[in-house]
Every structure is written in structure tokens, then in C-alpha cells.
Amino acid sequence: MTPLDIGMWVTGGLVLLVVLGMRVGLAAALAGVVGLIWIFWEKKDYALDEFTWALGVAVKTAGQVPHSKVASQALSLIPIFILIGYLAYQAGLTRALFEAAKRWVGWLPGGMGVASVFATAGFSAVSGASVATSAVFARIAIPEMLAVGYDKRFAAGVVAAAGTLASLIPPSAILVIYAIIVEQDVGALLLAGFLPGAFSALVYGGLVVGLALVWKQLGPPVGGYSWKQRFQALPGALPIFAVIALIILFVYNPFGEAFGTPTEGGALSAALILAIALWKGTRWTELKGALMETAKLTAMIFTIIWGVLIYVRFLGFADLPGAFSDWIAGLDQSPMLTLVFILLAYAVLGMFMDAIGMLLLTLPIVFPAVIALNGGAGVTAAESPFGLSSTEVGIWFGILVVKMAEFCLITPPIGLNCFVVAGVRDDLSVQDVFRGVTPFFIADALTIAALVAFPGIVMWLPRLLGV
Image 1: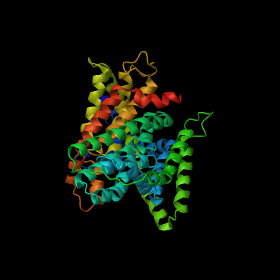
Image 2: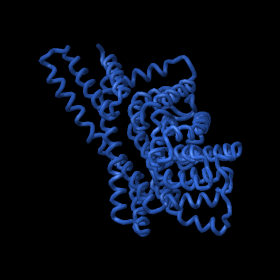
Image 3: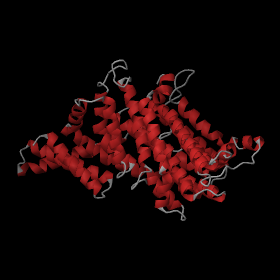
Image 4: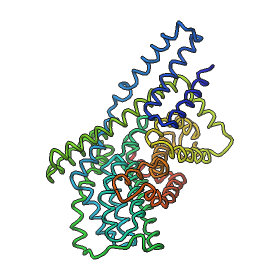
């Protein structure tokens, strides 16, 4: 049996373990270790007296992964971004954002829903976790929408869908994970996420207005705010813009060299939000809660990363990514059509797996195939079927798969954001949230189609800033 055959059998076993309900990180680590043992033992023709040797080599190989791969400065962005979000909530920035958005766009049909989308997009600029964002706005936005007569399913759907924006709008933990796994520039990916994230928010907002125009009972407009009251609400949102400015200046400085690394910019942003939280009277109990929640979520993400990276190490020995890339590149069809099929496969896979686990498991195999579709490493934009260089296609594909991960956060039966919103609100069932979020599938499909058809939406800001 060849290493490639072993790779396919072990990967099939991994899929089975995940389908049976085993945690992705544990299943990946187990599959990776078993696969390594199998490959090393096969080299000794399965001699019984060599099994101990194969086991020892496999365990040593797998044991090097957690430290060698995770001891990365870029990965420290994950806990920093998560902490920023929790501290921003304790500092009252979420409520200030929602109040400002409500005063400025509440007069529109479905205006409170639009305000929820825009406020969530703003909060996403200081929060790296979609689940946490959905939970926060389920507590803040849904009660206010229900108080003015919004349909409860519609209100829940708006919050669950808008919460996905935190996956795309920097600072985004999942963009950092993508960059680490496929070895792309973190700063370029963070910059590339701004415009698609804003575009997604506008599409969501437009959908809310359209639905409210057709079915007026879904969400009545809210008015009565003077221009003075609108401008008075803006200062509470200023820290959000400060965080955005810090992140950009630590990736690209239009007046010279960047101030530092994205990690340093994230750390300064966290310090700024912490200072604001303390100034606004955040107590030790609340601060401790933010730190504990950050630690729990970070531990969960890093555990998945460790397990999947052990599996990735095995894939390298099995050469499964190379074989898959050759097969994809050899298909007798348009590269764009193949890319669409890959994205559709992510949509199906996301119905049964969480977003981080899905990307971590698939990217080591799929990403080299996408690079091959584009003409291989080192290809120029003029030679590429997508009109993008190999570096640019890595960034473009990253935004596409993260947007697909957003889509999977609201699709049944695993749509995590929907479960979180239902868990926060006792008056809502999971079925209510899934029904309310259904129209947003159309918005996400349109957004993804636009990003595929017009890669310039993704690459405009990185190209403009020369990253």
C-alpha cells in the first residue's frame, strides 16, 4: 500500500469520526498519529518487531507539532482580538454603537434591523469572534427591536446573520488562522477583509430594508431624533475608529514604514480598550470575566489547531495535497467553474462542521489545488486564469473561504450563531432563529457571487496600500 493510499484511508476515517460526533481537534490528532504510525510501519513491511519503532517515531513526529507550529507571533493575535471584543463589551461600546446607529438609520423601513447590522459591523472591528458578537447583540438589539413591534423571528435572524461579519471584518481570528495554515501575509489578509466586510454589511442592510418594505409588519421605522441627538451619539463610537486606525498603521503607514507588526497593533488596541473600560468603571469581576472567556475560547481554538496540524504533518508524508492538486489542475473544465464547485463543497461541509474545524481540515489539501488552478506558484496576473498573481489569489481565496465560513455559521443543522442567539433569549427557539435567518442566505449567496466575479473588491485596498 502506497503512502497516498494510506492518506486516503486515514482521511476517510477522520471524516467518519467527525460524522460520528468526535471533536474535530481530537479526531484530527488521532487520525494524524494513526496515519504516521501506519506510514512508518509500512516502510518496515509491517514487521511485528518494528511496530514499537514506528510508534515511537510517529509520537515524536506528532509531539513536535504543538510547539513548533503554535509558537508563532502571528497566532498571538487570536487571544488579543478575542480579548478586545470582550473588553469593548465591558466598556459599553456595543450599546453606544447600537444607539448611534439607531439614531442615524432608525427612520428607514426596518431601521432598527439596519442599525443592528451596522452596529454589529462596527463592533466586528474590535471583536474577532462571531459567536461572541452574536451573543452580545442578542442581549442588546433584540429587546429593543421587540419593544417597538418587530417580528421576533426577523429580529433574531438579523442578529444571527449580522454576527457573522466578525469573521471577515478585521480584527478576525479566523483570517489569522487561515494565514498561518496556508502561510500567507497576515497584514495583507486583514486589509483585504475590510472592503468585503463592509460590502456584506451593506447587502445585509439592503435586504432588511427590502423585506421591511414588502412586509411592513416585520419592522416599523423609528424616528424622532434631532440632528443634535444624532451627533451626540457619535463620540461613543470613536474608540472603534481608533482601533481600526491602529491596525492599519501597524500594517501600512502612508507616511513611511509601518509602525510595527499587526500583533503589536493588536496589543496596543487591546490596551486602549482596556483603558477605556477602566475609565468607564469596569470592575475587577467584569474584567476577570472577560479574561476568563478569552482564555476559554483561545484554548478551544488552539486545541483544534494543534490536533489539525498533527493531521497536516501526516498529510505531508502521504503527499495527499500534491495528488489532489494534480487532479484538480488536470480537470478538463474552466478553472472558475472548478472554484465554484469547491465553494459549493464548503457550503455543504459547513452544514455539519464548525467553521474553524472545517477550514483547518480542508485548507492543507484545497489551498495547493487552488494555487495550481491559478497556474502554480510564482504565476503573474497576466498569466493567471483568474487575473491574479499567486500571492493575490491566496488572499482572494482566503476572503472567499472565510465568507463561506460566515455562511456556514447560520446554515442548519449546525449554524452556531443561531444556537447562540436562541441560547441567550429564552423567548426564542432554535427553529425561530433558523426561520428568521433564511432570507440572509440569499444575501450571502449574492455577496459571494460578487466577490468571485469581481476579485478587485477584495484586492482594491491591499493594492492601493501596496501590501
